[in-house]
Image 1 (cartoon, rainbow, N blue to C red):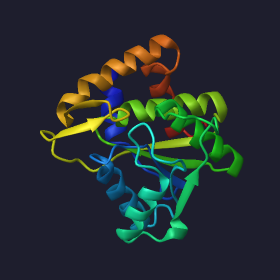
Image 2 (image 1 turned 30 degrees about the vertical axis):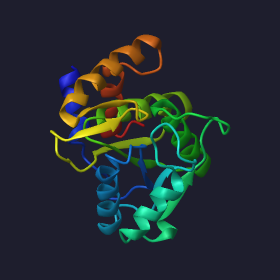
Image 3 (image 1 turned 45 degrees about the horizontal axis):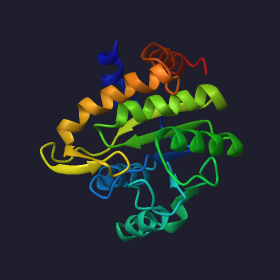
Image 4 (image 1 turned 60 degrees about the vertical axis):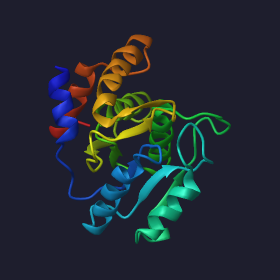
Length: 207
């Protein structure tokens, strides 16, 4: 069952347009993976809004201002860039659940209906599961779509997971699968079956 979810999150169908694309925080080593996909979505006019957490640098994430500067340098207009307030607002650390609940809360407040979520390819399945988990909890009508970031060298040594984990991108995959099991067992992540059912309902137009 996990195999089906991995393939579907890496090869999801996208809508003709979306209210925005949310970039899950990456370390500087991996940020280009999500930057490239954000630029492509805007250039292809699938969305006009690129969103990521509006925080200072923390937990391995270079911070909103650094990412905004990098994306503007890559040709993205400042008007396309949106800061997502973190939930809770006084957090002094970031992790995938905080990011997911923050963007879903923002989407609900803004009345968004369709969002594309992007993370590095090795993280994409867990990141999408976190987004679905937050959606089921906070805003069940939201339609989420999965788009993996641009593939980068799988053999390159990089930092990941709040900047504390280091290894090749290929080597980080096993850790992501372990986190899926661990966080589901803790009750922080929906099950694989629940996320697949969410995707099926979305595709049947039942959300």
